[in-house]
Length: 157
Image 1 (cartoon, one colour):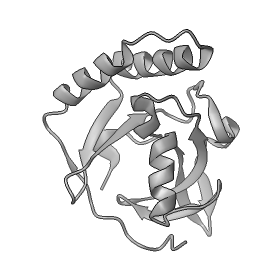
Image 2 (cartoon, helix red, strand yellow):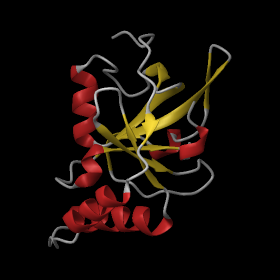
Image 3 (cartoon, helix red, strand yellow):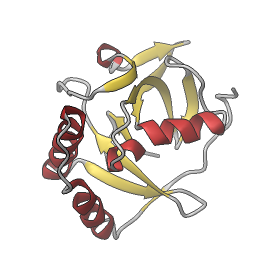
Image 4 (cartoon, rainbow, N blue to C red):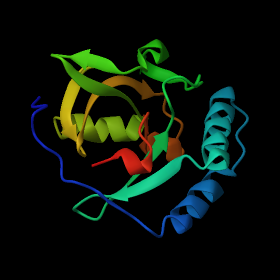
């Protein structure tokens, strides 16, 4: 794993409402399992709080981010990691933001060699230093492709 490989800067997608509508529609399917209810609850909370934003990377792929401050409690079912680690870290005297990754997005990041284990730092991840603190449980919903981070849209470089 090479955490020093810089990521391409992302630009804001000004037309994210269509994506949000499609994502909300995908979450309207009701499932009887508790896990599905948790993911629906999480996603509905995300949409209601208007803390979701979409960035487009240099290849034109949309990346879904959710702003969740470290001082607000979050209830996210994790398959790896710990919610208690969702706090700003200091590594080598530098600030690293905690990053919780959706299940499918984590698989992609691992295939690309961006991280392999919980606790791995990634330098210059879309302009910020981050540390992977968790991977969400698989939901087979849009939340599998989301990033939770304590940075709002305007705080990215």
